[in-house]
Image (cartoon, rainbow, N blue to C red; front, side):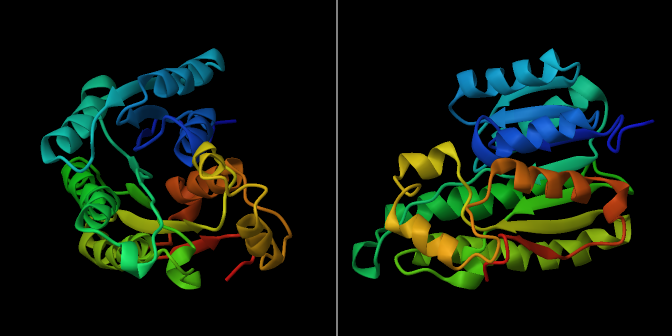
Length: 249
């Protein structure tokens, strides 16, 4: 039986670790040909590619900073050069830093907006030239845009922007039969979240207490939703923000 994404070509940004890495693995398991983009961790991206190829899948690692137009275009060009087409773009690249209002700086603002918002726009702009009917853009937003936790004004603002952009681009790209949706995870147990010291902390306990399904998310919980949105199963969905957070809202 043919896999859900057989023959489709997917670019996953920020795929060297965490949610992005798991999305790349899940897409490849459904026989998508995957470009694993990374900004700094070549080692991480190479490991994801090795994981995929060891299971008979196809993937290449491509370096690039999505917040730079030339890099964003080069990432998309690499997909077309390697695999001849583009069907799926997963906008997973993102950074987060938390600070109360009195500690917000210009640098804190611009770093997050440049990658989380400008980067998403630049690489989607590059991808839109190659995506055809049936194409799927999947933005990785965040439950914070709904939950609005304290000390996250800038990060939450970037993710509110992603929600808005998802709706706008669904309307712009709809006439070309390209779908644009967002997955908005709750707290997910990733390397980055562990580095911040969130897992095992009072912050995690607070999130879990608000989550009806009673645990933090795992990268695979998000990756399986991405497979759905990338596939023809989601052919009638566009402009949606899917809160993937175990019921936390």
